[in-house]
Amino acid sequence: MSGKHLITDDETRAIAEGFLAASPWLGDVEWSRTVFGPGVEYFSGWDRGPIPEDTELAEGQRWSWTVSFFDPAGTGKTLNHERVLEGLTRIIYGEHSTDGGYRSLAIRQWFTEPAEARQSLKLSTADQSLICQHALYEKTVFPTGEAEALFGKKLDFFADQRPDAPLAEG
Image (cartoon, rainbow, N blue to C red; front, side, top):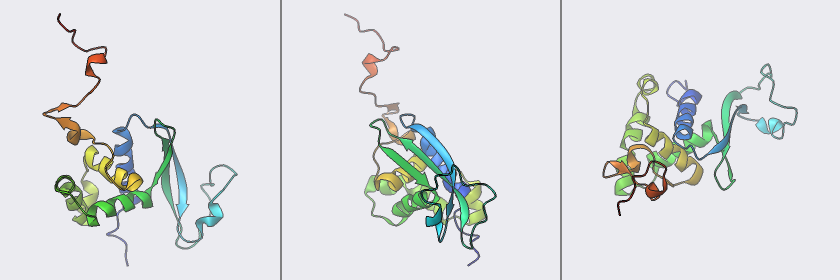
């Protein structure tokens, strides 16, 4: 298998970056490089700092990316190339409600594009978020982007408490 058709680390990292950009409530974001492939257990628990750039990797191993972050409750989460691919797979091959099926149409088209064309296309922030939510939670937990708007305006239950809220007449 040549692998030229496979989704690249750069593509999955762009998906994770879009998700994080659309999720300002996530904190302590930390990007790092990691090794994936057979025999990577050697690197687990590596307590000597980052894996040196000049580390010679075994056959089938490769460098990739990992990003860790925390939600407002302090729950730590991690995304990496393989995890984003899992989220993508759940959307492509999973069960879909009418709404979920419609929202995933652009993702499905992107997935089936030839590699060269796919790599030049950019998924929307809402699509990137949907992929990462399916990777992390196996479902859509919160809407983002255009899916967040109700009647053309973002739903805000606390609008009257915001500093720029219009004063009530009375």
